[in-house]
Image (tube, rainbow, N blue to C red; front, top):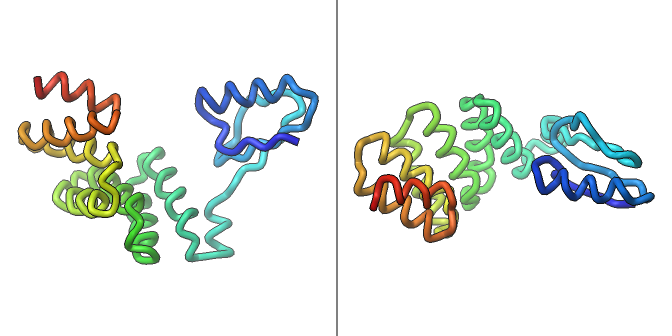
Amino acid sequence: MNLLAGATGFLGNEILNELGLLEDQTLVVTRRKMDTLPMNTDQLIIDFNKILEIDKENVNALLSLSVNSLRNKDYLSGESYSKKAIKLNPDLDQAHFLLGRSLQYQGLFNDAMKSFKTSISLNSNNSETYYHMGLIYLKLDDSNNACKNFKTSASLENGKAISLSKKYCD
């Protein structure tokens, strides 16, 4: 049997199609239903809310729900899940980053910056954090700090930051 977790997206679909050509059974673990699956493939959909019913302090489920909330533009829920994860483990840079994004999309830029700076203090190699800080500085018409953050993000190989750095900083 083949097991493929997180099989959405281009690479996941490519791998899934390759596995579908084999005669072995394949199990795909995802967060949402996939419409098309190759032959010999079953799907297991993980419901993170059910995980929290069993284990209210499951930080990974909280972070996953925060990501899903951001994807669905439900920024208040994303904020809530991130804050719960931070309360359980204040040293998780990803939780602070996700909180920052939730606050950023709500227009709460000062609070978002505090969360992003905490995230950076815990992990200075997350290019997305610098990228989102750059976006906030750009929104606040602070091109100097926007460029600093875009350049740092670009140095960490963030493609979006590389293009914004070229656009606003050169």
